[in-house]
Length: 120
Length: 107
Image (cartoon, rainbow over all chains, first blue to last red; front, side):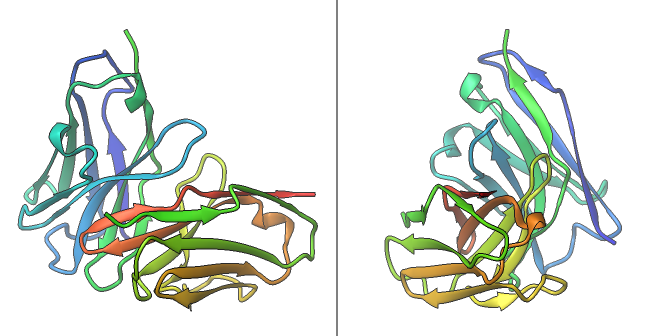
């Protein structure tokens, strides 16, 4: 059974770079049938797609975050990563990683989510 | 960019009620729409994919309909365990857009 697990610092200072990793177990990240994505949810608010990556390294970003986001993949370690630069308090959120099919276009499964707080 | 407008933002209903949530796209999105349920402290779970298809294992009281710009998510008979927030999600590969969410409460 495929599982995804987010990891990274729970506290980031304003203006710094948020870095998270999503480790995939129970399956290969190198499948041509899936995108691997990041979604976030500020406390008490809705879901926002951050971006996705294909195993080949092709990336796709939310236009509203594109200038600050970098998503990368490490197929040798079966993980993908998120970097969000110049963070502010507005970037405080639960960050989820999830898989989405290229044909089955919904996110499943999801990681459990990790809360990242931006504060000095 | 395609905008997704979900309504209502919150809803209170009684056990056994029929519940309907709407999602409207700013332009024709065919049937490229999914519906998720999110319970507090949990990741979302897909219930309906491609507008009207029930995901495996999801109770049949959940359904979806619509195409083009107007979509509807329905719970035919609300159960206590259905208390959650529901989101529509459009895909325009590979760009993803979520609706604002509908918080469902028991009256």
